[in-house]
Amino acid sequence: MSARDYLGEFEHVVLLAVLRLGDQAYGVTVRREIEACAKREVSIGAIYATLDRLEAKGYVQSRVGDPTPERGGRSKRFFRVTAQGASAVKNTHRVLRSLTEGLALLGRSS
Amino acid sequence: MTQQPSRPRPPRLAAWLVDLFASPEQAESILGDLTEEFSDLASRSGIAHARRWYRRQSAKTIAHIAGTALRRAPAWLAAVLLLGFLLSWFSVGLPEQLIVALLRTQRPYSNLHYEAYVWLLTYGIPIVSITQSLLIGCVVALLARGREMVATTTLSLLRAATIGWLLFILVGHTPHARPVILFPAPFLFSRALDLIGIVIGGVIVRKARSASARRLPGAASLHHSCGHESYRIGRF
Image (cartoon, rainbow over all chains, first blue to last red):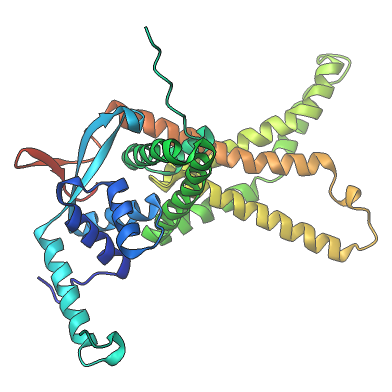
């Protein structure tokens, strides 16, 4: 793993959402997960732009599911995090932890 | 026998625009996700709210797709736009020259019927003009490689901005002239047709590429087996 394997802020958020969702990670669920956890509204376009970028970097893989009627006969595209993606998440956490260590801005947890 | 209530349909124009701007494989999943959320929202909050949400999401999605396309290969896209701009710039006045040259080969009241002569002068120039813009749009879209709509829409907006800027300068230099003399309706109509023609060129190429991608479903991506399911690696 390269030391440069760290993620941008939104890439990090999307990868974590995909990791949390496991086998059920596709556009709608990823969007809802981010909205529920991060309390921020994101568009489907932003999710796919990021997932496509992550896929090009080899951090996620996608597969196409079966078409369903509630989707107008269109299929879902499921995502899962690769080993490289998981190590990029760990590396990003390590960098963030070392950068925030000793800083008082996070407050004291009781 | 009871009839099942029909599913609410998402706004067609918004869906059509997303389909145009997204790549064929992206469009399938994005439109599916939007439709799924639309159906869910329509049943919970009503169809009017769901339609507003769909239109807003579509606009944001198109903006993201356009932004990503511009960032992914900026140098290539800039080169394609420059070529399109130069093509449209240097072909200004070509339809008029073409029609006049055609009419010079014919003499009114003799070979060519007078009404046909007038028709060519009135409608021939706009028809040749929109055909020329359409061809420029097609060339730009073909070279833009998967970013057909982003390239042609940007070119059209650039052209509109240039025309607007030139007209602004013209007004500045002739403050006492009436706008109707400076900007006659046929001129403005012809320029508007030019801009529309470029975008239509992009739509034609985009639709043709989508149709060929649908005919060859395996051509756009490579799949490899990963356990029981097939996962895709990277993009081609």
